[in-house]
Length: 225
Image 1 (cartoon, helix red, strand yellow):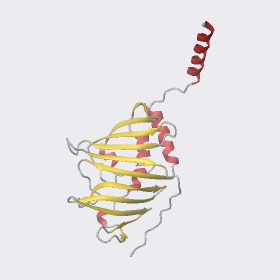
Image 2 (cartoon, one colour; image 1 turned 90 degrees about the horizontal axis):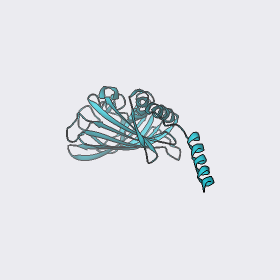
Image 3 (cartoon, rainbow, N blue to C red; image 1 turned 180 degrees about the vertical axis):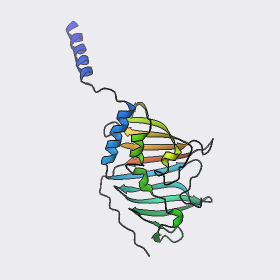
Image 4 (cartoon, rainbow, N blue to C red; image 1 turned 180 degrees about the horizontal axis):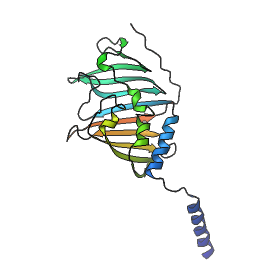
């Protein structure tokens, strides 16, 4: 019996000696930034809750949902659902470099992005400098224990630092940020942005889910009519 317990104790000591040390918040953020920088294509789903935020300069098209793909470095294709005075509508958007197109919500035809939507660029969320990857490098993070195989990184960021990332939809106030990072790949799988100053009861909240497509994604200019 004594030999058995000694053997178990020895195994435990060997296991502890070979285990990886706990990572700090900065180490997790740095590894996540590196992993995200290596991704060529990202599929995203954005769900908005709380007080509406608008994608146009006239404050008419309230963003409700967006789903699509970003291909590095500067291509994006998405379907965007909006609310206009309580009426739901849907538009398609495509961006390639500085060129951007959108479908007319009235007839569904593709056209060059109108001046009212000129700054709307979902690819900015994944820009290596001003997007989520850039945020990983610059924000002060607090690390929660790994849950369900993901690290939880939390931070509070001044909205002025998120202007480029959100195409001007966030410009001020305090924004609570939660990033979920896969403990194996260190890819960000989820991002939550809560604009706490927009409403005391229903703050504007961005829920962003991220995955890496298993098949190639090609983004080309849409057919103009």
